[in-house]
Length: 535
Image (cartoon, rainbow, N blue to C red):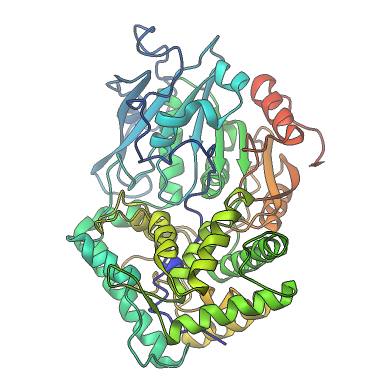
């Protein structure tokens, strides 16, 4: 059956495509996520940096650009020491492709090479909405292999609209967004996907859109991926790099492929891990992800049934049916928790999906499901809150949720026709009978105040240097087929296929030499695999 949920407002609040691309980089278990105290005063822990380098070693390339862009490409960035790194604000046009004259700022963190510098690698951990500056500031030594870290400055940036860059905002009072996220549907709820149900979802989308426009202003129109890719070219030039070295994960692969589309001649050593297909439409992206999470959850169930403390019984199919029944039951009878919230199917779905990014998280998911089946919702809400950066007091750690939705709304036109939404739902349900009901409905982009500024399309990037694309066979958030498709469409694409669980594979917790060695070789020597690899 289809589940009644409040306006797609749980995990699927974003554009239906790319909806689950936050939280995409699994850091070593002992480390906190960016935004949590690290105990290192913001230092990456590298032995070199502002403490031992008197000034940044780079200067702008001085390349020939149109006269109106020359001040941006020739600007002098005020680099300041921040721990053992350099931090600075880069000034960029608000609109690279129009007549808007205002400027915005992009926050950049540079973790200097720990040895003999070869160049710079820009890094993006995904999202949309994740802070590359925070990741590099806190965890530079864990994002690439030590031998790569030794030779390269690792450069993190907050994409426009995100974090320390010129931000977007979608509320005055965080309680507004908090309630929008977790409020349960009215009781009795309308028939799922009925005109009444979809109209309520449209009203929810309208509130969010109006709130974002009111609190952000006209800048809201200029946070799409093509604008971000143009900012990356500016950062490249200001760091004195003739070509862009880049490591992008998850949504970061869409930034990378978009860069290759716009600036193929400037592509250097580029690695795209857990790829997004740039030609996927809103509904195609949703189908990809519904299928991916259904597969990953089924693999979790297989493992769970072999473990002590698994709350399910019987076969895989029976456990999947028990899961569906549990989610459906929460719509009829939410579990009230101590803070007064009711745990419905949407919040539990967030908790489930958040723990499918790596098999290292499966033990947590077993505990959450056991708790919910016993009538306790606190652990599920803890996981769902953490995924969206909700603090115990109901405030938000950052604006990643707002950025996630805003960028997605500009990157692919939303499906707004009610009949098409229902037709898409049937296809999703056929592909993902257990979790599929939580992927269907009207997206929160349905009432966005601006038309999408990017049209999904195939990217070939003729003339670009080799681009390595990595895809995990059991990746839930960016299913493997998307990596296959991206590598095939890129004229210089090389695919590394990895038979593994989880989201992203390079330099992962389990250290797969079959993946890491050719990627490290490429970064260090420029020699990419001459044929696709299977690991």
